[in-house]
Length: 396
View (tube, rainbow, N blue to C red):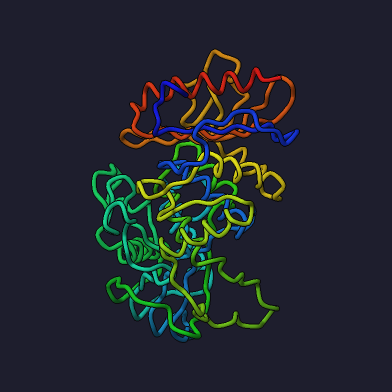
């Protein structure tokens, strides 16, 4: 750590025996970079649970006659699912069943043959800000446009060379086309708006479970997923809509009392959860792109140690990259003692490098550690971090 300079710090404990192993400038706050995702994912898993899913729903905004004609609009309401898209994109990137084609089939299966209004994209679960503080809350090249009604990560084409300028309208247009393939005619052009009170649910597709979303976020340090989950954290779980008794209609749509998920509220929620396990942090986003995301190595270790008793801890642990094997650690520590024994979250910004997580020492003890290096050259810093991880594995 001496070679990392005075703007860096590290902390390690033997969590099995509750014993401090190493401390170096461990109480001073440092820029977290993507170690911020540890706070985001822990808070999201705790609020939602590892098995929770995020729904994308379609509602009828008017009566449906005996011929299947909907006299009103069809509302596509986003539930903050970062995986929603078309079948080819979902299969190639995230897996799962949250596709526009499945929603279109649900509408057709409900007996709708024609929509006399518009397909309306509803993103009102979140605010309409497209980015976080690092980009002035506009679209960031490193994230893409944020929306409660996301479609194909906000990409405007299959090549990924442009972002959507209006995500909810883009998604509504995709549902319109998918409905046409199901033989459902929509008479008016796609638009945007909020689902009205009393609208009738016609279909729903759900994201992969939150535990899987954590893996998709942490393994490759996905900024888009982290920022979406930060807003989901603020919006909270959406009420489940169980099937009604036979012959009974589904209950009408009711807007939640506080519908908007925001980056700022999500950051506050992540800070609040960290406090419950004895960790303090200053957070402004979910991904760590903002340099204002800061905590001390001691507090990051407190978070990692404190969550080990939570029922979702196994999902968080397995979501982290494994040294020498996968994710952002696939090419690090490939030949030493740490290979396969350390699971940790990386973090990189210009002049910032971080590594925090867990190592299984040869003694059998679990070591919790956090290394936060500021004012460093990331490539050189990673080599130093890897040496420390190797030493931790050899402990005992």
